[in-house]
Length: 457
Image (cartoon, rainbow, N blue to C red; front, top):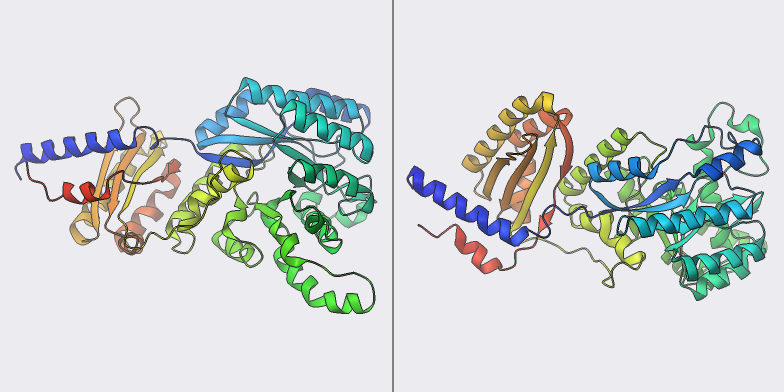
């Protein structure tokens, strides 16, 4: 084709793709199920009670505008708010926090959901608050601590609360708190959040399993934080030791299938492809959720972590089909935002279409463009399965790069990721990229799409 013909061809194909993807290509779909609200009333109460350092580290500052700003920058559409640790002793502070959460959900429609705190260890007051929050405030679930003043999840006195939550098909977001009673010497060398939080989470969940709490109240769904804590190691051990414990009348029959089916897991913390694969030994892909732990981690660190997650959920062949499930579809279904239960769909044999959305740090822009142009040219020249790699730069903001990517099949895409020129680009530009989003698009008319590259002007 001549230069004019090439220009005509690219202009028309870009118009076609822009029309097809207009409503979805740049959507911020990620749902964060692990973020915390820290209100002035909460902080004031803890200060009056001398409990600001109960968890061994200071509480971070929080304001909703900063939270929204980070969400926008990171590409997060919705965040689920829960009250931070420690548990306030005042029922009125718990009520006030839940009402603030409900107000934020209303004022920023579509951006926030919330799980209400409860004034445990008073079970009757907790039931009253749960009913009020779910039925009147529009709470999307309930936040429960691993323990409150030594009252651990799984304790018999909590059964009446779980019966109420079961009636309302409640989602429970679990979060570790300081163990009670506590031996401060245990955590003098290794701070609470580094190890004991994982033990606390594992302890609370295994307590519930050993008493079949989740099997007896099957409508309650529990989100376990921090990549499942030690559960991928603890569950096989529990299963192997159960016959011995039963022989000694220390535990009864355990319905493993029903208990584990009620557990979902957020990936806040040390997520990685290896961690996800380990978690899949005790759960299924539709039970994995994205979580940030905002505002306990610096926003720039959380953004980089999310970029890394998107990258390996795109590049790892066994995890790539789970990308949208983990980042938002599982949470949408769990929290009642979607009626369609997500499933992993194989993409072998189907054309892969993406519009890569990339934001580059200004100081690295010129160098990044050199890398991008090189990998696009070499990919088109050397790889038959790469149908299109077409980079574009926003006129309004030169740091915003969009790359139209079309691969003949999943296999062609996976081969592309292993090429020397792609690996050079990936490794060379990692520090240059501020934000990365790789939405996989679904062609409205696959047959027409295949004809586009055969058509001559």
